[in-house]
Image 1 (cartoon, helix red, strand yellow):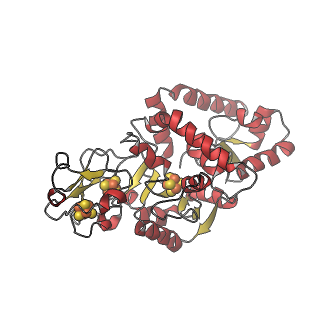
Image 2 (cartoon, rainbow, N blue to C red):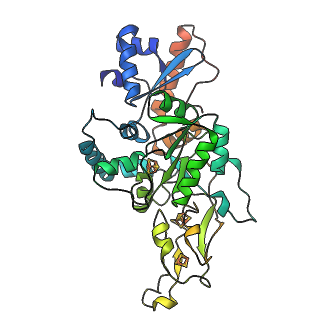
Image 3 (cartoon, rainbow, N blue to C red):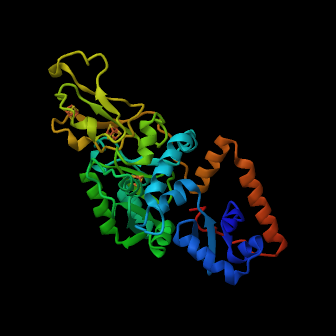
Amino acid sequence: AFVASRFPLEEATLPELSERTKISEGKLLPILDAMADKGLVMDMPYGGTVYYLLMPGLIGFFEFTFMKRRADLPLEKIARLMSEYLAESQAKEFFGSPTPLTRSLVYEENVPVTSEITTYERAREIIREAGFGAVGLCYCRHKKEHLGEECKKGAPVEEICISLGSAARFMARRGFAREKSVDELLAVLDRARSLNLTHITDNIRLKPSFICNCCRCCCELLAGVQMGYHDGIAKTGFAAAVDPQFCDYCGACFTACNVKAIGPVKGERAAGKKKRHAAVSEEICLGCGACIATCKKGALTLIPARNRPVPPLKRKDLYFRILREKGRLTPYIVGGIRKGLRDLLKGKVIPAKVPIINE
Ligand code: SF4
Ligand code: SF4
Ligand code: SF4
């Protein structure tokens, strides 16, 4: 905890952390290694130097705690405490910003033929362009497992969460995930689609670091939308729509939707079942397409949605925007200026490209 409390907001090298903690580099290195193994710190080799970044709680060491099968922690107790903490105090913090941290991805095969989607909207292209990918445990379903619950859609705990790029390298190196080929990662996407799971990724266009495959019963991100934070996950450029002409109100799509965006048409509840139809709430629908294949009557399709904002380009743009919206930009900027001045006074060459924050 002492070492964590001495971390700056941005990444730092071993000598910088040694100076901040007054612990010699020789003694500090195994401490940082142990913290990285637990997911408290991310270590990133870059240009011959290792940079260390303290992980935030969400998305960060909360998830990492449940991304390994481990016997060194009371996981059942932690699962319960984390669920209470998230429900009681963190939902607004996580989902309440106008710019969400995450966004959903559409099933490309359900996009109408008259519409086009760009590379950053295609899960398969994101995987192909990542350069490195790994697959690991689903943190949410693993946590539920320790609470005695299991996924009602039959989604697995193992080998379903995809991490990409530098994040994936870190996870593979530290035993949180296993390296996979592009074809193997694409097979994970197909498996997720066969289970009608919703893909969720970083709300950025360039190099997202993960694709989660999420269910309506266990996923904490989708739970935020179900709790009423309808823009807590950025939507795709589409929304599901029901053609009442073909809908026989079978209800298959009600339970398929991972954010409970489909229900009976208002005012039709009193009508006989034969006269009722399903309706989609465009305010809630993420446009993920996970429900489409469940409608055997061909009544469900995706249609282009209006006013869906373009995601920020890079991670730093996303954080900048969120911090500005929360009125917390000043410490971030002051921290950056202080670090720049310190480096300048020491005559250090500042790397042209800082590793993960800018990706
Ligand atoms: S966000 Fe979705 S896939 Fe990711 S850990 Fe949670 S349920 Fe699993
Ligand atoms: S109704 Fe919308 S959010 Fe729900 S599964 Fe279908 S496309 Fe996704
Ligand atoms: S699955 Fe299709 S037919 Fe059944 S309620 Fe949904 S839209 Fe209607």
